[in-house]
Image 1 (cartoon, rainbow, N blue to C red):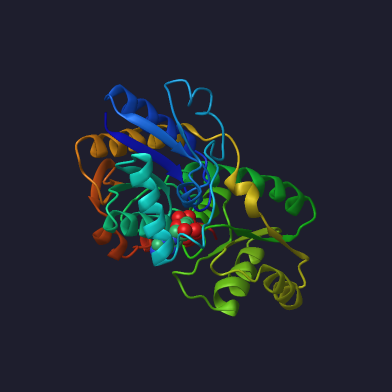
Image 2 (tube, rainbow, N blue to C red):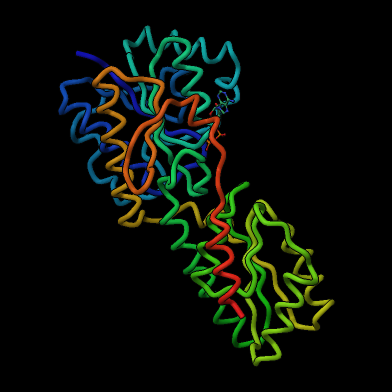
Length: 320
Ligand code: ADP
């Protein structure tokens, strides 16, 4: 029987387990052997691989993180590393791999395909920063966690008539900040995609809303903008309003995946295993116009992200 493998790589994301489960179940039901690889590309280099059965992926769909563990592998990220991984795959009889991760992991998948092991990428990252896909597994859970955390901050911000500057994750992508900012009613949302001016976009907005009676403020800042401690100090110095900075950090990566992430993981994992079964490699599974489709990895990696400026403008219009 044909043998395929599945691994999770780069930053973990809630819903990765649903994808692993779907790959294993789909592969086995198609009559393939499915190997689980531990700790991303490291597992290929160290041959840390085990054969999965239908029950290997039981009771993981509702857990955050990844049951296969994940890693960043500097050794794999070299031409020699990729060659060694491909040789190990040939030795272990692995004829195709589903790689669940972000665009760094997709570059690895493309390189491994070039070395003769066909790979299919599945977008798993809370950052939603894969240009080719409208949606990445983990984003919904992370947004909901961020909203819950900011709601908690809001209670205390409100009670003390304070300003709260909150940094959310997202690397170079402002999607998590934008969605969270709208959902918590932030006065200002700072994202790397839209340049801002301290005086006009922060201070003047705060002053304007203060005149109409607003007494407490939430400013959501994307990781890609950063600098929340300095920003908080500057705001306090300029307005006299007591201002605190909070970096939400890795809590946003954890937790039980939402329905959306379990379903996205399941459907994308199914699609990926089915592609390998039908002999297709060097593909990435993506969401486009709400549908799960697949694209050439190289083409997908060359695409550029489009930020939803229209949504950003709406957010600012109504946060007055
Ligand atoms: P993510 O997949 O979440 O973007 P990383 O960028 O850390 O996370 O990538 C995960 C792993 O993929 C890295 O540890 C490395 O082994 C591999 N990788 C990253 N970039 C490349 C690249 N340009 N070429 C080959 N492999 C890469």
